[in-house]
Image 1: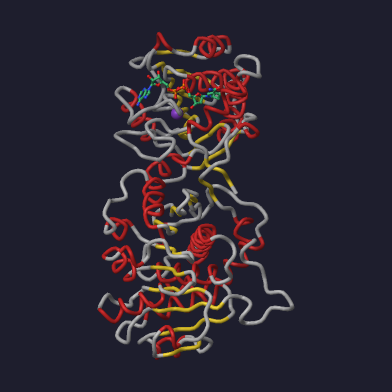
Image 2: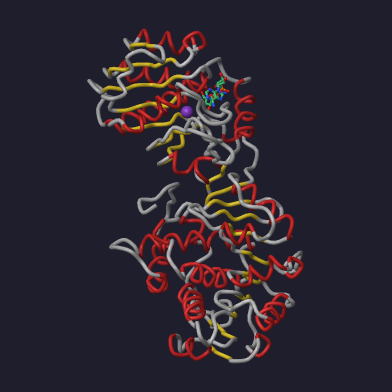
Length: 488
Ligand SMILES: NC(=O)C1=CN([C@@H]2O[C@H](COP(=O)(O)OP(=O)(O)OC[C@H]3O[C@@H](n4cnc5c(N)ncnc54)[C@H](O)[C@@H]3O)[C@@H](O)[C@H]2O)[C@@H](O)CC1
Ligand SMILES: [K+]
């Protein structure tokens, strides 16, 4: 599990460590790690052209010291000082000693010929979007030929939320220090950060336990273990599905199929799309009656394609009245937004799976702070909220949050949400792990499946169902996790 630490948490840990180390040691650790990543990206140092955009704080100091290291290895480094009188003095001296050039914001900056551009304008001390002339230089860097590398945080991105209020530096890579900040992996910040590289500067033992996380394949594999010799179809978790309609059986077919393909045990279906489900999935046990006629289940998935009429409302209420985990998706979300008391503070876990428009129906739009928004609704309803997006966010009522790392834009097609609901039902039905972890694991597996299914071209939702066993195998087989994956 990768912890996501806020700027304040990182600063607090830095303060403890700063008091115990010689002055400048932490910055040297950061600059050494930064220079090492730059060298890897450049492939060579001698003759490489590097431009560093340098602000007035310690973030600029990191860029200057890293620039000095690259210059010492033969790179042609130009530092563009945005505020020449306030640039980090020791960093500036080191760069000059190593043969680097220095200019002001109006000087010749080499941006149009740089092999690599370092963004050391602002880091965790930044507030709001980039101001001119930094905004102008950032735009030129993005348009130029050089590899763009953000120091700690892309300037203009809020490190805690990923919000971009105005202009921000568009990095292909971000080298971050001490801990990954949430703003690098969620919201608009995710797009600005590119691939995230974490440099250890020794903060680990001093960091507060993070309240937000990213799961890796290894974490998710622990929840997708193969059956053991003593298992039977009941012990692997029985999923109940209420979805679809006689006219629109598709959602029921996709949702049931996803539950079966994630953890083949037993799936029971109750509703008016029974004929379609029987035809597609002879493995499912189908009743045309009400959920209470379906037989014993361990978790319910309610909503995809079920409609929002009185009958649908009664079905949803019946499922929510049980003491079982319930996934509230699609049409069920519309009904829950109208009557939040249906889902509020149930004894068993409830997982709501809104996209932004569905989320807004609960009263307040998502806004730029996606983790904050999910936490707010989760606390208000006493439920788990899985807020879908480019990087899906999961929050539990106690504020525990997860940001998904495996999302791919290929998943933006009809029916993929029905598949996610089915996966989620399968992971909830075993009762372990906690519902927010199960929801985060479902989002992770869904993303991996999307990557696999779109490896050779665009996907449709039924491709996802077909690729689920392969994705489960892939996640199980992968011992290591990564922040950003090749398919993302
Ligand atoms: N504290 C430490 O021990 C360490 C800090 N490190 C670096 O220090 C950074 C934090 O340094 P600081 O606290 O000095 O702050 P920053 O360097 O992030 O930014 C502070 C400066 O930026 C200006 N500023 C704020 N918002 C701006 C905007 N939107 N546009 C233009 N300028 C803006 C402020 O006026 C201030 O001068 C980290 O991100 C990291 O890069 C690393 O060297 C590791 C060790
Ligand atoms: K920066």
